Image (cartoon, rainbow, N blue to C red; front, top):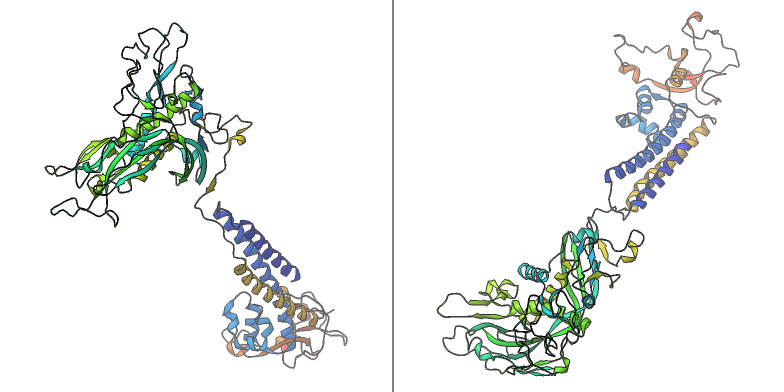
Length: 627
């Protein structure tokens, strides 16, 4: 009885400890954990129940020794732990109250372009690293003339493909399997990286009908607008007008060249051959909604009175970025969290209409000329060339017009911008109204799309920005992978164990209190029974019911054995105690087992069940069996 109580409490505590251990952890192998919890709960319940049953058994004998009860009540009391219906006996509940009560990631580094030798490309994991630009050279294949140099040609085909794909998708191009490689399978993750790249700094130059666009003030001079608001709706016919090629680098630097861009003339070559002279300013005019400061047209019959013109200009700057990458359910989202414009990529101002006349086929003139980026400044030239390639792809998409013709039902688009997110198909492919911000965002998307191809030279390990990633998933070798790890926040939507200790202990507290109370009552019963632990086994019951005290009862009735006792017999009251000696035995000596004398000695005590008057319940004896 006592051991069952202690074991039940230990199992309850173990159940609590097990659930506390699971609390907050992912619900992995949930079926097995549920089974373990069920085993502990069952063990606690069974142990506490066994303690109560043991205590109940002690109360049975105390009850039958202290009062006489009908045979029906005795049946209910002995069967109460096995048959709940037995508890419905009113005499049992009334006469044995105590007995009845005992019965729940990566980064960008454009400095890698500085030292890249395109003749000797870097090879990682069997694949060559790819620059953002392609090159011509003044060096013949079979000789090395003094003063030879490489010079810029244009964006590499690989980068053109990536930029075009990003424009068509209207989002940052995602690297295949990036989510699994960066976050691991089944996880979402977010990380931030800092790097330096190009960016376009835009400013509004004019807004409103009849407004005059201001010059763009640059560090190197004043850039004049190439058009005015009069060409835009409602005065003009254009809903969108972008001029992005003023001062563009000429891919033909010399008129007469051999294969690979080698000039046919002998050195020395023109001073400014291959020079990056300026970065074209992006000039965009488009229509926006009118406001209080910029009212619409008041002309009668003006079909475009709901729009007013706006002009803004963007200058190419070297920019510090903080980018955020997020992978949720294997889907990538990436954006620039913040940016800081540092300085113009090429600190010059384009002078339109002024011929260069410097011996090259590039007729662009910019001031001051001493700020030109020359091929002889190899490392700086290569980096600025990569910036120029990025800017070129943006300008290529932006350049052109959208014109509204009264003779045509739809606007006429003469621009690749129609392939991007900068034009609104729901508004007849007019530009989005926040076009100035969207141009900068579109450029940022092109830059972030570089991550989709780890073989690009600027893609490096975030934890080791001087090392290219190539196509590797893990940096370093098998001994130092951890040195290439980069901080990120990982999360996932999953079932988690949540343990409410209060709910569990409410149930266990009730069970333990009841079991303890039952054991206490059982202990009192043991004391009343002379310190002897009793049970209700078959042998004990037989021993308590033998003898002449019950022989006088007609148990079988007139119909003999039908598996029950006659109703009249059930109403007889029996009790347990010391049997009086003046009762006949009822059996011959030879019919007993083991054989013993029929004659009781005066000091012999025999205990058992009997009718009222046949047993003495006031006399105490030390054992169920007589000695």
